[in-house]
Length: 324
Image (tube, rainbow, N blue to C red; front, top):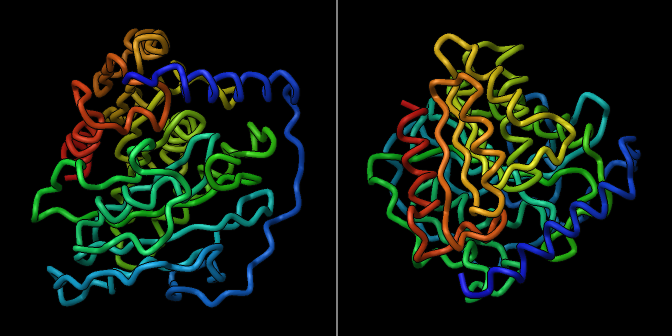
């Protein structure tokens, strides 16, 4: 990408400067207050309660026939997720086109929040939905908000999708307001545990996809979920991991590889950040794969056209391989 220095340097400097300032202690924050606007749709998934959305839809979703008469309507449902340390996280649940579907949990980078995944969520849901929310960035520049170039999801595939915001994180480019390294691991695990309880999903087929801090959170929480519910997390897909949560990515990949069968883990990074992916090659996980993306940049900037291999296609390949 021609503008490679732009967000790669900004995001890395932002992460590293925050880490240096905050040391290793996880600060505490007050739980997010529920906004007053009405929800798009209520969720019936235990044990969480619904809350009002933080932003109103700006476009009505297009209708598409469900492949299963038992499928929930495609509209995103507002959810709240309570962590083990009693923080409340806001999120959206996008039901799949059929019942008992695999569920994908999307974890954002430090530069944004759950809105990073507005377009990716409906793409994976694959129900003819139009993103009903306003994107916080220019899609011509930040290409993960421009679905016109996304590779096609096979017509017979539809994933349930859960997005959420890590504690104390705001939409792009405000991003995360403080570092909560241990807390973000708890947030990621709470989201995976919540996902497996959602109505209409197969609790034994969960996958995590994350960017930057979310890349680490995806792998770490997948491993932790499988400690409690063996075999439930089928894999973690990480865009630019970097040990940002004070958990060794290599050790996590090693732990995932000790499952029977080994849990899949895919690592995708620009050559400048590929060293951590290479290090994980020696972790002994036979279900591990990594990909160096020339001109890929950091985190969400990997979600861009004209890259080889194309990370968006790798996401589809990963899910096709792990969620059968």
